[in-house]
Length: 121
Image (cartoon, rainbow, N blue to C red):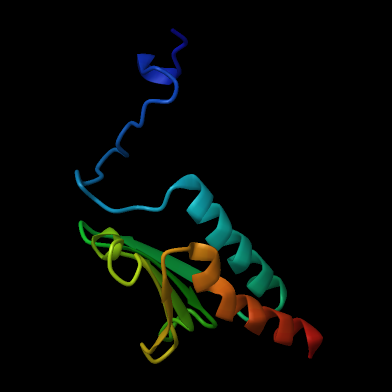
């Protein structure tokens, strides 16, 4: 059995030091998709900063136009809603729900369309 640093076997999920047990987070693919959109929005001049928050109920990624204001967009993952309207929700700048669903790509679609408009301008 191969092992990585600290003697733990490869493929074993090791909790982040100081992290809380039972905390909701983003997996690598989810975070990659979110950060890919973030990077393209930064390149288009739409976003400049982001914040992430992880609790026992949800994981949140918030994107800001300027650091000192409310987020322009917020993506929330709530696994408890997986069997209802979907665990993904995209919120707008004023807290309005822009899209809900089971698939992250579909939930991010309104921001993708906004990016296309920003690039076309």
